[in-house]
Amino acid sequence: MSTRTVICGGLVITASDELHADVLIEDGRIAALATSGTTVAEGWTAERVIDATGKYVIPGGVDAHTHMEMPFGGTKAADTFETGTRAAAWGGTTTIVDFAIQSVGGALREGLDAWHAKAEGNCAIDYGFHMIVSDVNEDTLKEMDLLVQEGVTSFKQFMAYPGVFYSDDGQILRAMQRAADNGGLIMMHAENGIAIDVLVEQALARGETDPRYHGEVRKALLEAEATHRAIKLAQVAGAPLYVVHVSAMEAVAELARARDEGLNVFGETCPQYLFLSTDNLAESDFEGAKYVCSTPLRPRQHQAKLWQGLRTNDLQVVSTDHCPFCFVGQKELGRGDFSKIPNGMPGVENRMDLLHQGVVDGHISRRRWIEIACATPARMFGLYPKKGTIAPGADADVVIYDPTAEQTVSAETHHMNVDYSAYEGKRLTGRVETVLSRGEPVITEREYTGRAGHGVYTPRSTCQYLN
Picture 1 (tube, rainbow, N blue to C red):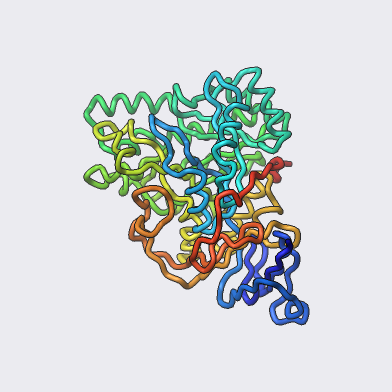
Picture 2: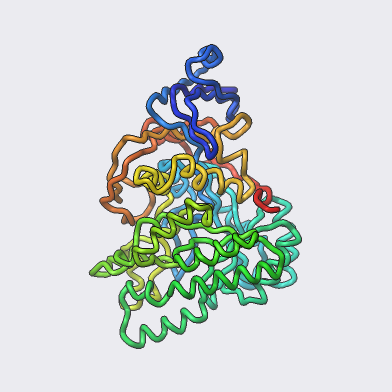
């Protein structure tokens, strides 16, 4: 049965425009926009009318980097697809792209099927998948072609984690060559894992076991070196490259140089690198373990360079790399040995609000907020204009956002299935009020009105930025 919704009186913000407009939604899609107060807008009738006066009307966020239920280091991420997508909705995100994992010795298809089974029928919002390629061989390369055809158009490789996900330069080159032919996009975790393992071994031998040493051994120069190497391998292969979770100013410089040369090289950063630092990793009583993720948090001076990269478009996307592990029972696995702390942090619920704080603080504009959090990730991963904008024909993934509401972030009030907040006590200006996913209210005036199973799998086309 068709339901019509009108959102009236708000300021509609997209990556390209800001306009006071009413929005008409029919059959789960944006049907029309009309200037508020005009005869066209006033002529619309609907079963559901949402008054957005004094609020922003923005596209639902697209978080292109999450790890729900991900196995890691003998445990697994604390959020299921049900709890994680519900928390995402609370934070104004209406689409996630999660990572299916190929096991070494297994087929890509086995990994993808396993992730479909985890997600299907459990998600509050729409979802897609990237594929982690752990084992590059002739069969894997053929499978990449098939996955691209069915809407899994991006493949992640790791220059880190030897013995787990690691690919050597030859394997990376082969996958990049395949992506150059089939239209896929290689996503790279760029850290020199072989060198890092040497530094880890040496640190532990010196008795340096606390969480802060996680940041000290995973050096910024080894992120920069791997970023440079990935760029050159992509250049040799004639393939595009997307570098995930960029944390170091030296890595940003490598990306900027490549883009200045006209290469199809893209970069993503995450809120934790914009707002947190090695000061957090150094917190006493093992509290620093809460902030162990890879790439690691950097000294505070890197933050300004990351914000600058977002302004200058040397970094194009902000995702969360949401991979939560509880402090009690999970992060504690690394007491006495920082290398055994599960790598990952919670954040899928906080991204839109933290980036809005970046607007409030003068780091980025409102439209750039929407660009890096909604439109560009949708374009980068073949979801635009179905996702990432408010325009006729787009899915009605819409957030009513109160730019003046104040909140204090806390594990007491968040909805992620994890026992701490990485931003505990942080005061933010701006808050999600109502969220629609394909026209259906998932959050209604700060109440959860969604359901597991509303979210559907969304196949993706190829990257929309490629020449």
